[in-house]
Length: 633
Image (cartoon, rainbow, N blue to C red; front, side):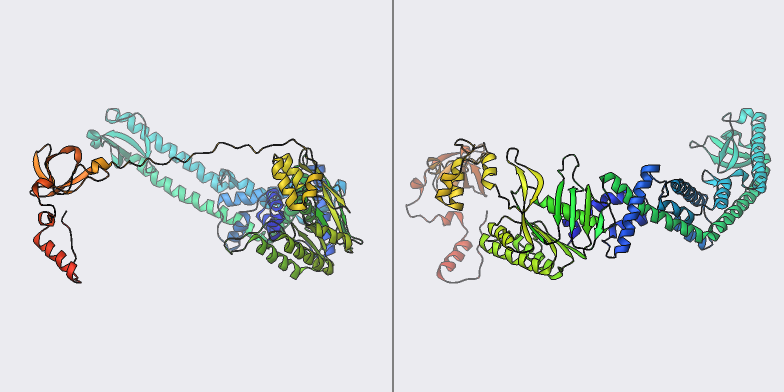
C-alpha cells in the first residue's frame, strides 16, 4: 500500500525537493518519514520555524550545489594532482561558505538560533585566497610564482623573436613567397613558399597547401629558436605542476574542515528547504500533542489553489474517535479526508501545515484506502482491491493510528456492501484509532448515530451551482442528492420517475418536487456506417455461355471451347488448342452452341482432361487411392 501516492504526499515532496539545492538534502527529502520521537519532532518543527523567520528577515540563504566537491576532495586525498578547474570549484565552495557564514552572522541580531550554526563553518580564508591568486579563468595565472613570470616572459620573447626572423626571411625572399604573412603549422613558425622556389629558402618543409602549390617552410634561423622555445615550455610545465601539486596538498590537508563545511551546508540546506516550503504554501507551525486529538482551523489542501480552496474546520478527539462523512458525490468528501491526513503527516514530518491554527496528535501509523485500486495485472476487481487494502489496514491498526477510508463498502451488492462497511467500522472502533470514512449507505449513518465514539458529519453542497463548498458540519448526516444533481444536469423527468420509484416506491414519486418541466433527452447526430456495394449477380450474363460452347476469342480471332461459364466478375475460361485461358466475356463471341456440337450427356472431361487424369479420377471413384489429383491450369 503506497500511502504517499494515495494521499498525494509524493507531490508535496516533489515541490519540497525542488526547493533544496544540494543532492544530499534532496535525497533526504525523498526518503523522509514521520518522526516518532516527540523531542526530535519538536526540534524539527523549531528548525522549520526558525528558518522561515530568518528568511523573512534576510532573504534566501546563499546556498550552493556540492555535486562535484566531494569527488574533488577524494582525488586530493589520494595525492593526485587537481586540475585548475577542480581547484576553482574548491574556491567557489569556500566562497559560498564565507557568504553563508556572513548570512548567518547577520541573523544573530535577531537572536535566531539558526544563526549560531555560523561557528561550525570555516571559510579556510588562506586556502581560498591562495587558490584565487594562483588560479584564474581555468588556468594557472602568470603571476602565480616569480619563476613562472620569468619563464613565460622568456617564452613570449622567444616567440616574438621567431616571428621577426621569419618576417626577415620573407622580406629577403619576397619573390619566392606565396603570401605576405608567416603562419603557424604544427606548432612551428613557417613562411609560405611557392613550390618552384623551394630551394631558394633554407629550412625544413613542415606542411603544404591542399593544392600542393604552396610549401610551408620553417627557416633554419627560426628552427634554432624553436629548440630554445621547447626547453622553456618544459620549464613552464614543471613550474605549473609544482604549483598545482602544492595547492592540491593544501586542499588535502584541509579535508577534515572541508567535510565539516559540506555536512553543515547540506544540513542547513535541508532546514532552509522546510522554511521555503512553509513560505510557498503560506503555512503555520502546528502544535503537537500526544493526547489523541486533532484540531484544524481553516485547513487547506496543500496542492489546491488558496484562492479557490474553501477552508475546512475539523475537530476530533476527547470522546470522539471516528467520523462518518456523507454527502453528494461532488461534495468534497475525499478532498476533506485527504486534507486532514496530509496536514497531520506533514506536521509529523517536521513541516508547517496549511491551516490558520492546528493542534495535531502524533500517530504511530497512517493508514488509508482511497481510489478504486483496480489492478488488471493482478486480476483484482475494484471490490477485491478495496477488501485487500482494508484487511491490510485492519491488520496494522491500533489505538495510535490515523485511518482514512473512502467510499466504504463500495464496489459490490449494496446490501452486502453496507454490512461489510458496518463490520469494518466496528473493527476500527474497537481498535481505538482515530478514523475518518466516507459512505453513501443510510444504514451506516444510522450505525454512527447509535454507536459510542462515532459521529456523522456532512459536507455542504451548493444546489444552485452543483459545486461543493468544502464545509464539514459535524453531528449531521448528509444526503446524496443524486436525483437533484441528475435533474440539474438534464436527466428527463420520465427517467427520474422510474429511478425514484425503483429506489423508494410509488409514493416517493408523488412527493418528489420536480424543479423543471418535462424534458426529453436530446439525441446527437452520430457517425453512419457505410456498407460496401456488392455487385448484383447478373443471371442473364451467367447463362450467356454453357460448357462446351465454341467461341471466337478476340482480337486474335482464335476458336476455343468454354471450360467454365462466366463467373460473377464477368470472366470465363476457354480451352484453346495450346492452353487454357481466363478471359472477359466482352472479348468473346458465340461461334457454335454446345447443343449443336455434342450429344446431351456428353462427357466433357474427354476434351478438358488428359487420359491419365481421367484414369486417376476413375480409380478414385471406385476405391481409396493415395494418388493426388492435380489440375492443369
